[in-house]
Amino acid sequence: MENKILIFGHKNPDTDSICSSLVLEILNKKSGKNNVEARRLGNVNKETQYVLDYLGISAPELLESVAEGQEVCLVDHNEFNQSVEGIEKAKILSVTDHHRIANFETSEPLYYTAKPYGCTSTILFEEFKMLGHEIEKKEAILMASSIISDTLLLKSPTTTDYDKKALEELGKIAEIDIEKYGLEMLKAGTDLGDFSEEELVNLDAKSLDKDGHKFVIAQVNTVSIEDVLKRQEKLESAINAEIERNNLELFVLAITDILNSNSEIIALGAKADVVEKAFGVKLENNTAFLEGVVSRKKQILPNIDKNM
Image: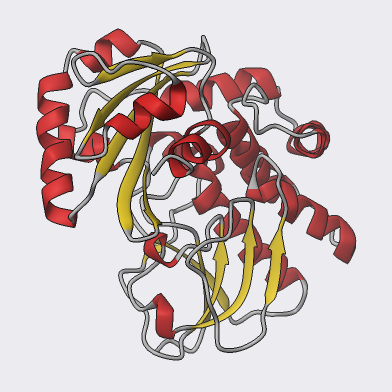
């Protein structure tokens, strides 16, 4: 067991998961808690790598499992099936999250901050303010990048006034043109050409459970849905392998156009018809177009969850 308190986001980490872990480490150290260290639960995607390269910093160290009693802080998730191996026996000191609360239980009290914002880093921005700590350029860029990513440059329906206010202030501290920087960052994440189909369906995949019904909702961002669908046959093979490997009843891959704010989904599994009920669409060749749908958290998951 490590002596340090480990901070990490969910498996298949996105920009918010990685950057918020780094920010919470900084926030703890500014509060005098130096025995903390950020970790990651998977590979860094290209969007996040853009941020790290921009800052000239390294990604957190990979964490594959935790020992019983290991002290941890969770960011950007709370569901155990999205967390590190061994999380059930770890000592969870805090959670900072903006998702639903599910499949979560601790044996001891903890600090739990959950707000229905567009991004975890917006919550951390408020904590900096509340604690009276100066926000420096590095953490401003980390938090701004998280907000840009999770809200698709404030275009996602998950965006709140709190996210807008935070991003405006963070952009000034970071001394960046939010629109220009944000678009370049998001476009970096749409470069999918050198990923295998197996890697694509796992880039940003969240494992979920509804009353024992296991399913996954994965998402990839693109500027051309058509280009991604050219790989549909191989993507479906990769999805079916995940369904068999993990005993899933449904796997949904959302291919999201970040420029036009629409998604095309591929749905496979014994409960694929749930998608038809959830969105009032008909799957054709295992796909359906969802106009105006870009948010897994607010638009995709709630509809699927109540129809499982």
